Length: 112
Image (cartoon, rainbow, N blue to C red; front, side, top):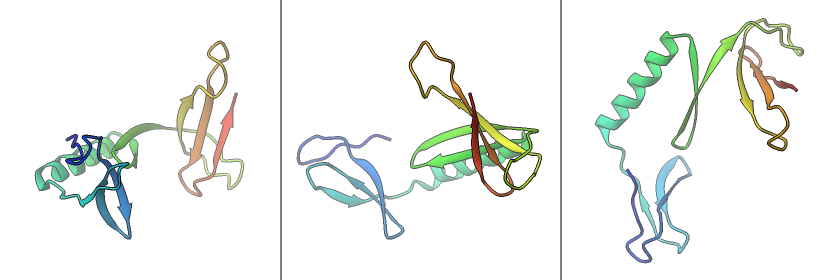
């Protein structure tokens, strides 16, 4: 749910400070965020369902990405399972970069 600052009508963004979650505005306004228990249950259930389907969920703030598992040998530890994703790291007319992260040692490497 999107919330706006009562002082300047700016967008409140989620910040974690000393383990507590706050909604903070650029103008300096800050309030402690209250987690909706029903929303939390839905997010946990969605993560469990994704893991059962052999997928890994990576969360950062409110961003959720689902990365598939692939058979790929880690160049660092030799483990043969990794998660994978692609990103456009160069100009639009260049091919995207393929990233891999070892599921054992968490080493990340890329292929062009």
